[in-house]
Length: 140
Length: 169
Image (tube, rainbow over all chains, first blue to last red):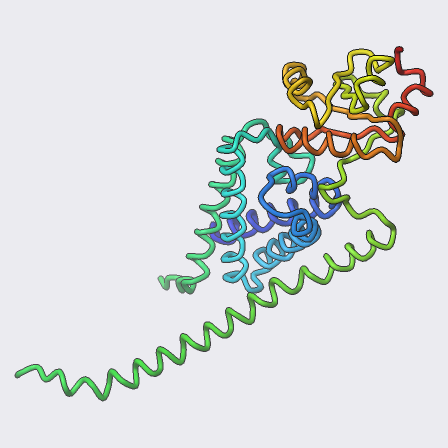
């Protein structure tokens, strides 16, 4: 039960984040571009692709369709988000996190990094539980 | 009874074969699913991209700094005006409080801009007219060197600003 609750919550987080970003690709483009990690053309492609990837991953985990694969891709995404945040922090950039679209103007870097770390831990938990079959109910 | 390792070999080999076959099948399934996961979002993303491209609403690449109209800028409270015109024109007339900034004499005005900026401020760069590209170049350089998010180019430049009576000669 706890396992399903974590999966649904995590799926919902990705779904909401994806929908918010998909609603305004222009603003999301500016947000990713501000990290200055990729050439503009790639940023443009990501601004359109990433929100739908998040939506698909969220739906997959919530409905248990390809849950293991969804968790693995989520782990990769969270790793990339963490890398981007930490690198922006180290380079002294003064930018918004944008983790939940343009409306997310979290101040500073510590809060978004901690939030991503918690999400990352939940994703790792989902990978682990999806690798192992659920224990059969005890007979008593 | 003595342990005979050789007797296990006929049992281990088929078990290893079975495991490697199972692993190959699992790997193929995961690879296929992963490919599907990455391909499915591509369809809506391409559809929205094409829709925006047909309407001309794609984001401008970083070589084009975002533009702001005089009317929009008039509604903002915290603005730092940057004048990217030749110095002679700046000395004749400029927006009140505007900082003169030229790519050729960058160090003359850039420290003043750094001093004036505070979080939440919008930097609006203008040059002579709509067709002038100096403001784009100056705005791009400001953004590159500072990583400030809110750096804009004024649509229509000084001409529009003067017409809108926002300027003070």
